[in-house]
Image (cartoon, rainbow, N blue to C red; front, side, top):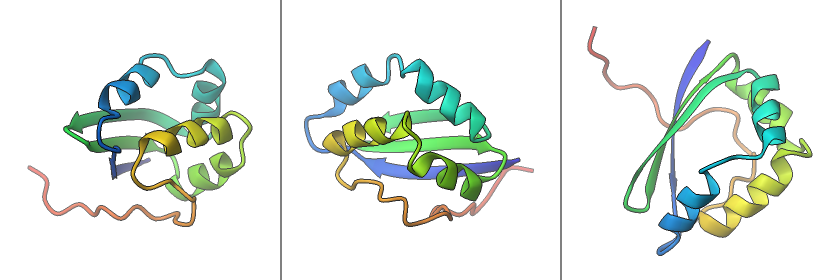
Length: 103
């Protein structure tokens, strides 16, 4: 199991819309995430900044599985309207590394 931290940023003024879209995600996307090995995905928002904490069996596998998945492609297109930087699925390694944890 991997715990992955991610950071994304909303376009200015799209905060409420982002939260509304995430109020209920499509059932087929939920199923795809679970099939990709995701156990938990939580998102916090501070202003335009989004902080994701993902618990997944294998992050690289999840990315490859979801890249062209028919439930994920339209979701990513919708997210691209709301985020400053669109996810192009070029990276299979998260960019945020753990610095410290309370033992």
